[in-house]
Length: 448
Image 1 (spheres, rainbow, N blue to C red):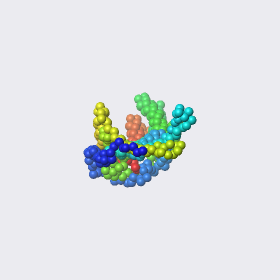
Image 2 (cartoon, rainbow, N blue to C red):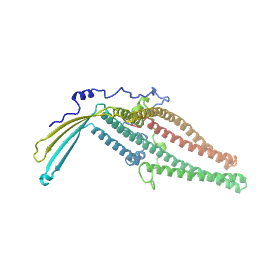
Image 3 (tube, one colour):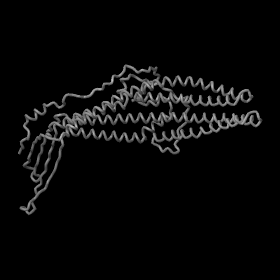
Image 4 (spheres, one colour):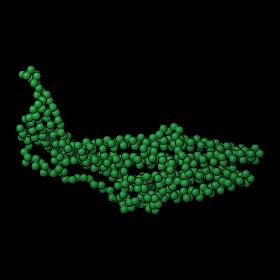
């Protein structure tokens, strides 16, 4: 026995001919990308094809730390779980485009046969929803875009972790060098104090000079604990980034002046759209939102389900009964819920478009600021190195003149402070050059 379909074939043909997608209203970005960046710079380092941008600094200790972070950082592990979840959601969406098949069996009897005659039957059925208005396809598109968004978010997280690690690593090396400079400054202060004490005991200088140098010596000693605290903070931060317990964690010492100073290639502004993972993530989110608009629109249109089934008696395997069916469903009244869902999906899409455009503008700014920082930090370090050499000569001269009594203590203390400040500024300038290179790598999307 064949059941009569609920819908005439002619009606199915008509429905299949309906336009699945209404007039396309996919939003377009209004941001006009410039032809070039405002800051010009002669690049000396190409972006590594493998994405290992940190390797361009030529620091093996840094390379080892980053390698560990990429495999053990807890935030990255959580991000990978999010990617796995998004991939599973895509498989669920893909399955919606396939028929659903189910099977069942039953056993029955009645009192007329004294419950001794059992009737056994089995049924195999299949159902399939026609995707007349693109709802299923849009669901798959949304799931695919969400997966891409999760993957790009993971790339962005990797870039954030590696750049934070590199910045903390170089900050730690600078802090260690600053501690050495503070120790040298303390030794100078102690040497000057001994000179002052001898001259004070001999009655050559007043108690004011003695007290002034005693205060300067105490200030020099007070700087050491502060720098030690900074070193501890940076060292433990690195431990957390690589997924290790911070207690008793050590980072090798390196010479900052042997570390490479890469000048990465910035490329063209338009390349940011396919390079920066945060922009690619924002674009994927926008595509998912557009697919959700199509889903919400299709929910307002009819849905058609096709079904087929076969039932037979297991005892005789005879008299199989086949059935075919088709059903049409249409929401007649929803109290405005479907319209509200469509409006909500459109508003979400507009918000994501604005976020995408804001991200593009921020990316353009990031690159120009990083390019400018590379130029200015190099010029600043050059002048500060000159100031460092000159301040050292001035300190040696002032100390000698004070020993022989041809100059006062104020001049000597001023020369000492100038030398200490020049040394610290030179170290900060080297750190700024390293930080500017890291910032430019991040601004252009790393080596992705």
